[in-house]
Image (cartoon, rainbow, N blue to C red; front, side, top):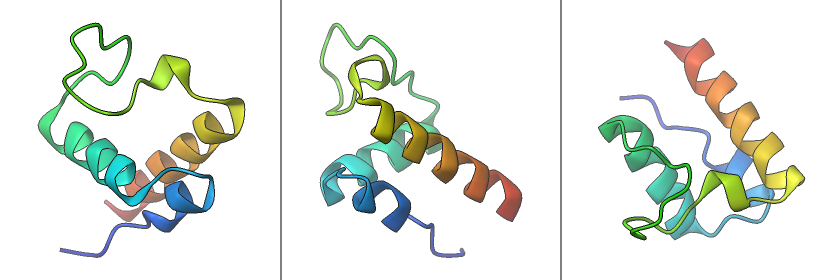
Length: 66
């Protein structure tokens, strides 16, 4: 498996653990929006505009790789 560009996320201020949670959420199909049960450390709806933009860039980079 190709190494994922998680540096896009960490460069925007996500911790390594948050970046891993995002990757795992995407792989497992977990909804990272409005997590009222706090099953993961990232709630996309509460992110700063900079982090939302980095997440979008990460998704585009990964999608382009497939």
